[in-house]
Structures are given as C-alpha cells and as structure tokens.
Length: 239
Image: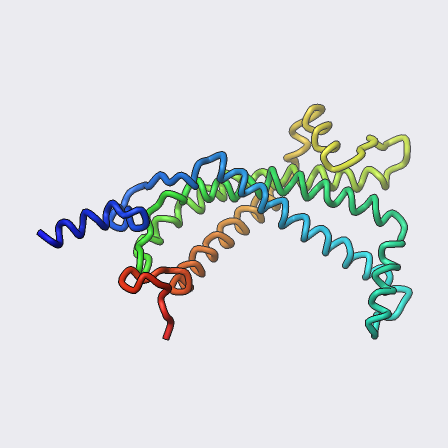
C-alpha cells in the first residue's frame, strides 16, 4: 500500500510528473509561439556575433597587406582604430547586420523552431541513461529536411546585393540591402531565389542534422552535471 501511494505521489509530483510516461508530453514551455520567439532570438544573436567578427577579421586581413601585425597592446588599439576608419566600414557593417537579422530570424529561427517543436515533447529517461534517445533521431532528420531549403534564398539574395554593386551602372538593379534584394526578387521572379541552391540545401540539411544530433549526444553525456538526485534533493555528485 505504501509503495502504491508513493508511486501516485511521484507520478503527480510537480517535478517528476512524467517519469514513467513514454509518449508525447505537452509542456507549457514548448508552445509553438514561445519556441519560435526563443529560436529567433538565438538565431539573430548568433548571426550578429558571427557577422561582427567576420567583418572585423576581413578588414584586418586587408590592412595586413600594407601593415605588419600589431605586436604591442598600443598597436592593437591603433589597428582597431584603423579598421574602423577604413572606407565603407560602417555601411558594410550595417548591411551585414541586416543580413544577420534576415537570415537569423527566417533561416536559423525556422530550423531551431522545427527541431524543438518535433522533439520537445518526447519523453527522456530521468536519473539514468536516456534509453529513449533513439526516438529523437528521425524527427531531427525530418525537421532538418523540412527547413533546409530556406538557406538558399538567403544566400542568393545576399550575393545578388553584393554582385549588383560590381555591375556597370546600366545593368544594376539598385538593391539597397540583402532584404531589399530578397523582397524584389521574390516579387519579380521567385524561381530566381532557388536557382542553383542545391549545394546550400544539402549544406543546411547536413549542418542541422549533425549539429542537433551532437547537441543531444552531449546533453546526455553531461547529464549528471545538470540532473538532480531524487533521494538527496541536490545535484548528483560526480566521482
């Protein structure tokens, strides 16, 4: 009798309510709108950091063709000041950040949302090796396949914006940003956004599948570091 009562208490505990449920669990924090908001924030933040680093590093490499690399802290500050003073540094940075906002919200945000939406409710074994991890493989692959086509139009619109500036004036489309190129190409000829994008689609599919698969593996591998011990009511101590 005691064990039956204890089992009921555990099944309806606010912390361990799903320890013996092997189906799909709808949790409040996995709502589609909330998942999308978190995914967009993560995608935009990641791409903004990436574009800031890439822009500064590429400008640094251009300066290296005329100057020796900095050797002292004072030279580092001087080099950084020279980087910001280069021609079109500010306008190029704005265009990069605009692309980060576009691709981070549409491409990366969609990939994260699809992944979290497809695996967020799957039960995972608590307090032991996750014997249910195999159930996440197929949804991860399917979510990657469903969103892999989004990267192509993002790259095409960015390349169209950059290459437009190299054309003779009579052949230019007058794109003002990657987002402007994306919207104008989508209205004029949507097919042009997908032309020759198969390498980008395969790249996105492979990247998404392996990245989330590796995330799941590492999450399980280091689970003793973030699990709570049911008996001691404290974190599990690693030997």
